[in-house]
Image (cartoon, rainbow, N blue to C red; front, side, top):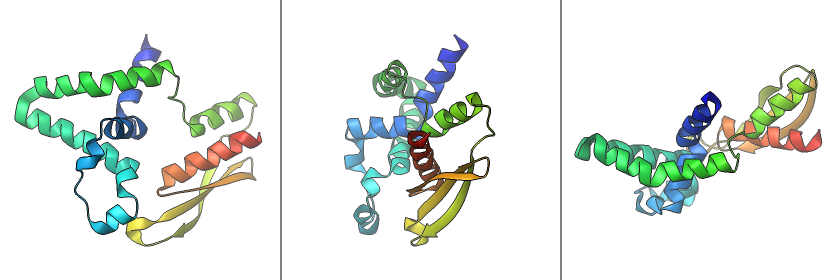
Length: 159
């Protein structure tokens, strides 16, 4: 039961889960953003999409109380979380790589930022993942977490 509850909590608060709820229900269509943000893909930015859901829940709580927030959670977030748990989509590439490396008796992967490009509001990060001093793969993303996940995914494909 404890494993399931941990998975359920994770499925309800992960950026990917909340951003999926935002897109699937077209909440992202109502975001007001600058032309610059729009032009750089702001409506597809997972962090922004997650923030929309968190803000909506907060607004529902302030305006309608716990009952309104709970109703929203049960209608939109819980079904999505149950689907994620059923499909076992909770393990991200970094976790899978960590488990694989440990099962092979090797030391944990090391992630290192090897590049940053772009302006502060629109950076791209490049991250390398190494195991026992050997660089396996690199990944790029709009934030370090995304780049690390992509590097881990590439590393998994190689080992």
